[in-house]
Amino acid sequence: MPEFAARVEQARERWNAGDLPGYLSLYDEAIRLHGYSPEPMNKTAVTGFYQMIWATMAAEGRPNPLLVFHEALTDNGLYACRFTMSGVHNGPFMGVPATGKPYVLPGITIMRFAGDRVIERWSSADMLGVLIQIGAVAPPA
Image 1 (cartoon, rainbow, N blue to C red):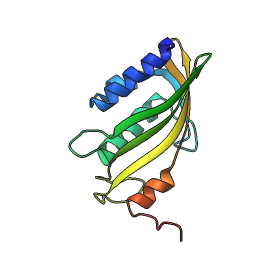
Image 2 (image 1 turned 90 degrees about the horizontal axis):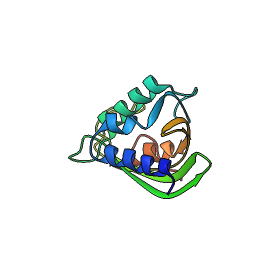
Image 3 (image 1 turned 180 degrees about the vertical axis):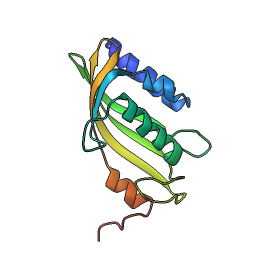
Image 4 (image 1 turned 30 degrees about the vertical axis):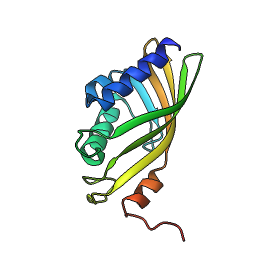
């Protein structure tokens, strides 16, 4: 396993241990995260984004959602994986007041490393599916 794959796994373990700063140490100060906002997020925006996720979408009895990585691929400084994040909608999320409903968010991400830190990341996650699960949007007929 390339060294950066071990670094990602360490960050995921920090996330699941309730250590957001430990998780965020994966990202370089120059990070550009694509996919969760119209423009790429910088380190300040990434930090705020994950603080909001933790405050509104944590798993029952935890300060954070549960994060599981599935298949992972590495190539020339890139790490890609399929992931699921799960928890309970316990605070305002995307304009939707807390519903107390559980959710599972599947997604795929690609991270580009420089040394042991991520400098660019592209993610795609099923936000519509989450909105359906928490009751904010009606499921398709």
